[in-house]
Image: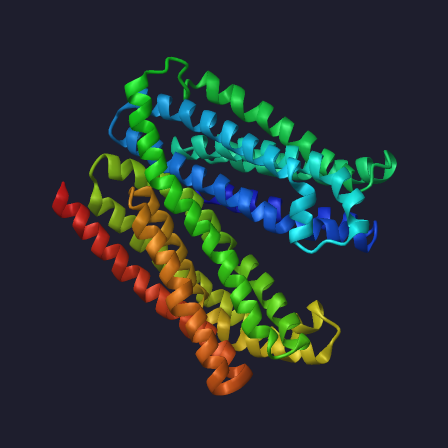
Length: 424
């Protein structure tokens, strides 16, 4: 379940990196336009992922309870809600683009480039969301191979079309968005005919069943969306704390954050691969199997991340020299790699337990774990560490914050599981 997601996530990250490299050749202003899309994109992604989490949770639970008809009804409901909600959001963003650019602090000379880019970019974003919902339905039914393959196909196609649209057709930054539109259209043409052929969606809509399904979706979707908005806010707060130490530290922190993201690719894939299994077990009331699966995943993550941390420690000096030519930044990054990665195992466990709680239908518990991790452990430890021992304290605080959050998430998951056991 997880291996195809690892390959797919890596492919997506690669195409986004290549996309940025091509746009970077167009100059500073096009890159600035892309930068101004990031906050808006995070809003769209938060809603998209919230719907996707709810999709996997409710459909897999219905399948676990052997209710195939309800699973088909939910599939149709998810696609309909996602289609309309994301379309409405993208239209509102397009109609208010000048106001949004002004709020984000864009200069007047950026506006014409942004206006040429935002329409195809919003279309590509909406298509990407529809493709993601298709992936979610596939995962809910226990299939990850085709979504993983389509992620690779669309990513490679995007990378191949980028130079064609940007440079050959001379479309500039808008060409990058049009390349993405073409790639996502191909992805949708692969995914959706197969969903229909497998009868994972139903066109026979029943009002009462759809209202019940809608309530189930909303009960998971809203908290899941809220939990997606917490990390960007906390990242801004963490950046403000780190920025007090100067440009070299903020540069090293940015590089460390990128290393962190690459090191937890397997964790991200597990958060996609496990929920369908957990949801089915929850539907069948197999709580012991859920606990065995969770322990297996957490044990693997702790061991894997410890291995990554030891390797990072061994080659920390070489990593610093490879990623930056600035000796001061490289030295600070080396200090970061000596401390913070040893807490990535606990961070990974926290992320997995959030996805498991969502899959069990405990979306408020998942939201609480996400909020406590960042607002009660990570940020306070970061700030206290910086105040007590400067730069070393900052890195130690980040490490302790992740470790504390991992321990807290385990106890909160155990408490929730015991409550479900008693209530069956």
